[in-house]
Amino acid sequence: MNPAALENPLRHLDDWDDYVASRYKPGKAAEEFRNYDPDANPGVAEFYRQNHALQTAAFVQSKRAEYLPLRKGKKTIWEAAEFLNTLVDESDPDTDLSQIDHLLQTSEAIRRDGHPRWFVLAGFVHDLGKALCLYGEPQWAVVGDTFPVGCAYSEKIVFYDYFRANPDWNNPLYRDLYGIYEPNCGLDKVQMSWGHDEYIYQVTRNYLPEPAQYMLRFHSFYAAHKHGAYQHLMSNHDHEMFEWVRKFNPYDLYSKGAEKPNMQELLPYYRDLIAEYFPEKIDW
Image (tube, rainbow, N blue to C red; front, top):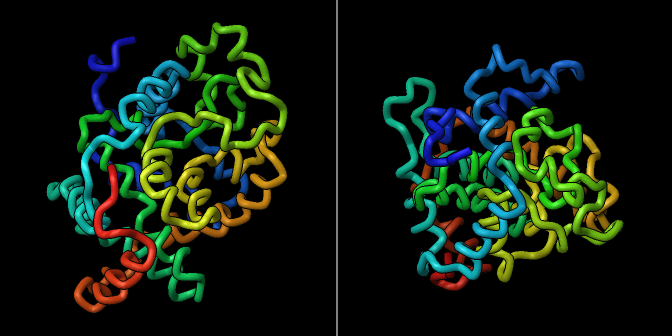
C-alpha cells in the first residue's frame, strides 16, 4: 500500500479531538465505549484502516531515525504552540478554538484541581507533538490510539481486524505475544506506533519529571490504560506510573468545550511555569 496514494480520512486535526472526546465522554454506558461502527463513523474507520495497515515496525524505525535525534531546529514552547495554531481550519463550523485554547483548557482544568505545577505544564504541552502534521506527516502517523509494534496486536485495539492488511501481520516473530521483547521488559524498551505522543515525549523528556513523561508518551495508549492490554510487557514501575496517565486523561478528554481561556490574563502564569522547567529554546 502506498501511503502517498491515500487521501486524508479526516478534514483536520480537530475532527479527531472531537471524536475521541465524544467516545469517552462522561456518563456513557459501558456498552457504548466499544462502538466502532464503520457506517456510523466512516472517516474514523478509514483513518484506522490506513493507520493499522501502515504503522509497521519498519515504518516506526524509519520515523525514529528521521526525527530522533531532534533535527527540526530550536523553538521555545510558545513558538511551538503558535506553530501548531496554523492547524486550525477556519471553515470548521463546530469550533473556533485554537490549539493553544485547547491546551489552556486542559492545563487550567488541572490547575483548578490543585495538582502540582509540573502536572499543569504537562497539560499545556501534551499536544504539541501534533506539529508533525506541519512537517508533512499524514494524520494516521500523528494521531489515533497508539500501540506497540514488533509484537502481537491486542484485540483490545480499536478496529483490530484492520491489522490484517499490515505486512507485520504475516511475520511469525511479530505475531508472537512477546515478539522482539522480553516478558515484563518495561515500556521503556518497547517501540510504540509513531505519532504525536512519542514525539512530544522525546522533545520534553529531559525537562519534566517522570510521571509527566508517562502522561505525554502514553495518553493515547488506550488499549493499556483503558482496557488493560499489554500487561505482559509492562514492568511494576510501568504499572505505578500508569496511575498518573489515568489521572491525566480525563482532563484532556473532558475539558474541550469549556469556556474559552483568557490568554492575556493567563500569560504571566504560563510564562513563569514554562521558564521554571524549560530553557528558553529546546530542540525539536
